Length: 389
Ligand SMILES: Cc1cc2nc3c(=O)[nH]c(=O)nc-3n(C[C@H](O)[C@H](O)[C@H](O)COP(=O)(O)O)c2cc1C
Image (cartoon, rainbow, N blue to C red; front, side, top):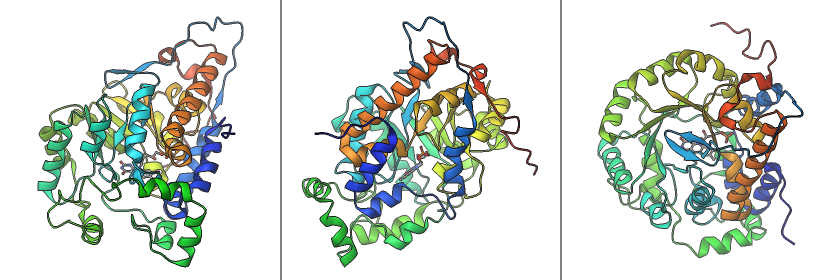
């Protein structure tokens, strides 16, 4: 009997059971004390929905555009590193699920499957996420490859010039090569399905990088290269240069402050993602959903505002849209699906969120997600916080 999946939490439990601990922990962690990681989700719970009755609920739609392209629901799959270690060929599986469901897929620079791998197995154009590296020739080359593969938007991540520490990754010795320690061997003995699938693929390292960056030919040179390569000198001028080099639609990801949102809008970004990287970078930062209203007030009429970090249900998506986001992105919610059941699990995650979103919208008295506004919410008076700086 296949497991009955009714919520993202079911997928999380299965993900934990079926994937090596090192990779599950990589997904289910935030930086340092994990305060921001926890609050990203718990702050959604502070918002309540307003129930309405006796409203015609026929002919509902959750379809909304994201940077001009129509989606089944405004929920993109966020860029996530090493998806291909959660499940063999993970990025290809997630991209296929997104394409069939009618939502955008974003491929991370730090993926296992390459840009070309994903392009080969999909027909819908996907988005490519760029980490700006010191090696400018590599960055130019990546952008050229993304263009050649027909990627329809460039997502530039701005909140990871240096890495926030995640304790579990250090303790587990995170690497794409699992060391044969007694602990790892014991762990793998219960994850045989994962192991069999991994044996069946040749995609087991960072294929956007190996063979493309100078001096990176194998896993050991790769590890030292990546540790040193994130560009700590990234600034708005460089962002502009990259936008010009790309010449197509650009989404700036990792904005959490109204002043930065204004800079991003002034540069002419097509969209920004209000995000704290899922609580994986600055621990102690406020949650994305709490910061959203200020950012909507600052630039809501200038640039399309998306939000991620903490979304685990369709109710969360509904709340983000009601608070003024034009769209949302999910990270862990679909990675749990991927780790639990591969492509089918990603599809299941999208189905779960879609159903929750559709039914909750209807119970709030709406038939069209594009018409939902703040009036469906009860917002605690101090939701934005009485903070000063
Ligand atoms: C395991 C993991 C890996 C991630 N890798 C990347 C990445 O390579 N590039 C990037 O821009 N964001 C990355 N992120 C951040 C996500 O794109 C997204 O902002 C975050 O997951 C949203 O929070 P949520 O997981 O609570 O939905 C990663 C997140 C997770 C959980």
